[in-house]
Length: 96
Image (cartoon, rainbow, N blue to C red):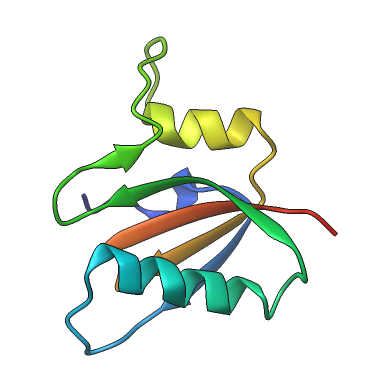
């Protein structure tokens, strides 16, 4: 995927690990990490940089940003967790 962090939203937090992660493990790491920054949050969107799979899978307009980022932006996403330099990206909304 190799998107630069400037395309992502809000506070940008990087996680690096030598472990061979699957999506579920990466998501669990991101959820643990975000608790260091806010007590309550909601995962708005994500992207699997290995496969290109993302959520939500909507299509909207033409923009330099992918729809999964635009969706999180429209919903107020304010914290991005980047696992292993774009291997997995998670955008959260802090609820506190």
